[in-house]
Image: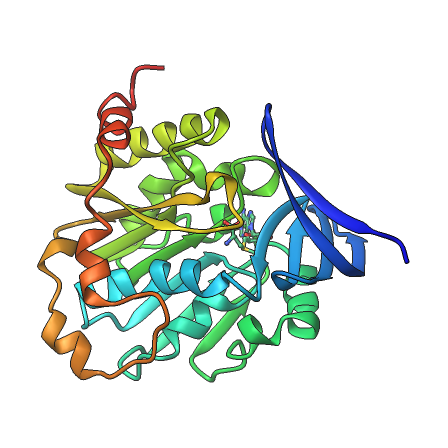
Length: 285
Ligand code: SAM
């Protein structure tokens, strides 16, 4: 039997490997290289340009934290825009809220969505909810000239290389600000404070967002298969403070979550000193 391992470089000096049962799919789309695998430890997973996106074992952590933190901060959210998110995990969490009326998802790569429907039903199963509208376009162009439309924008993007690069630009964040309603919230994939590449992107992202939004915070969660396992989301808003979340009201919804709860919600904004220091000096380089 051949011993197959998927290996991702997490930094110049560190690699992460997963023992693979089977390489299920390998295709190049107009935007990126797409691969699906089955593995012993993490179940099925997929990579874009060789970088882990989602797997059956830890996807719930990322998708719950990107979704429930803003929703518990404002339970009146009705219209949501997801940018990226082709695996459907973020949409699956959003559909748990009966109060949400419209979910627009803009994914640049239709091949990612089609392959996830086939190999990852765990995340893609709610993409056919009747509130969901799928757009196969570049999120950067989609958001331009949209005014006062969405209560929440979730940027569920790849790293800032390849098609995801523009989703970390100042122009994009400014367009998101314009597209949000007066209580609007923007959550973005905020990279990680540990390895140099991720630190650079984390600082660049924070530096731009904090100049545009009156409230700009960062919260953390642990993601075993992402570089260092320590990952961040940005929480930016026109006025909603995530630390004033209504725990009682959220708990009364009785939603089923495996990672998120309202204690984690508050605690996730408490950052280690070295991360605070890096964010405070985000405009240094
Ligand atoms: N949770 C993942 C992570 O951080 O590794 C992200 C998952 S999700 C699959 C990222 C998606 O963003 C990909 O499917 C990719 O095709 C999409 N994407 C990248 N750039 C985009 C753009 N400019 N507009 C819309 N979608 C984009």
